[in-house]
Image (cartoon, rainbow, N blue to C red; front, side, top):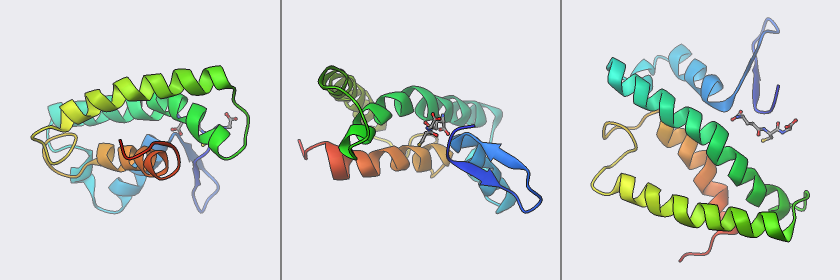
Length: 127
Ligand SMILES: N[C@@H](CCC(=O)N[C@@H](CS)C(=O)NCC(=O)O)C(=O)O
């Protein structure tokens, strides 16, 4: 199981960032952040899974070498190229929307923030 892992008081463990966050939101009475309709929930699940797997894979290619943990010049440049295209698509998706799904804060916004904060603080320039 990869990190982050949530360990419950009785020793049971939950893995995958989007699953851990969904569990915490549900336990904390924030069920609406997991979708109010079947369509919204499907969108939230789709994007959460995409960010936690596909985006995360590329994100690791930037974050790990930034903190001195492996990587190569080729991988670094390929990852920068991937994010350069991806960020344009994110900006287009968010144009005219306050949040990623349904114009209200959901699990997707939290997971995306988790990627964007270190990405913009440590890796990408303002441009
Ligand atoms: N899709 C997983 C990816 C998690 C992930 O990449 N975790 C990294 C550290 S942040 C990890 O545990 N790497 C160690 C390994 O691959 O064994 C999630 O979002 O939880």
